[in-house]
Image: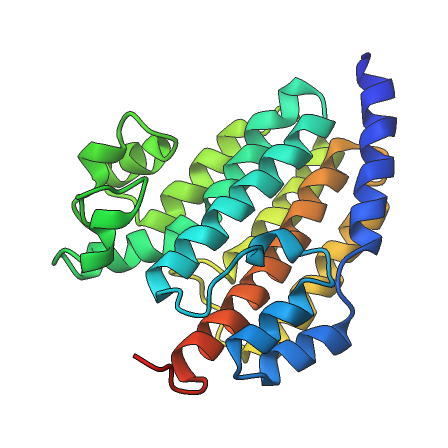
Length: 250
């Protein structure tokens, strides 16, 4: 499939996926809920049903995190397949977003967390000690950047920028704007806005870019950032319900 035809196909898919995103009313219900199974039932009627499929009430917090990371990786891989191959590295690198915070936390807390032993990526290596183990894996650019002295989030941004296949001034301006939109969500960002305000600002700015970049691969990147925002809100709602909802029977 030629690039022009692939972009047209991708735009149709991206527009449909954008239209399927949950309404704000659903997010408000999810964020106010505290019963995990009730929230799971609500999510099953939405775009994010795959993230909670067969999710047991007894799920442990680290298992929930692992499930959501795996689902997010699948979402990024799917969207990347829609676009020309030159854009795949930029799209697929967004799959690593959920790792930045725990790895940055691990830099500050060198002791091994018990859940790391069960994680398929970290295995028996703690987040802080993972750099050598990550060297041959999908997160190897983070390891390389941190070894050079860069904070985890800075290493993430630096590699993402290296994956951008376009250096056209107009496209670079849009890519810079997308990179800036992500900065407030990664460790080390200077944003101190309340969560709701940051969600609203990011939603508005990236949605404008999604619409302006319709018919280009940048619309795919904007879509994934919007979906990452959704995924973050879903993760927060489920984690709160799991941790602070009704007590479970041992």
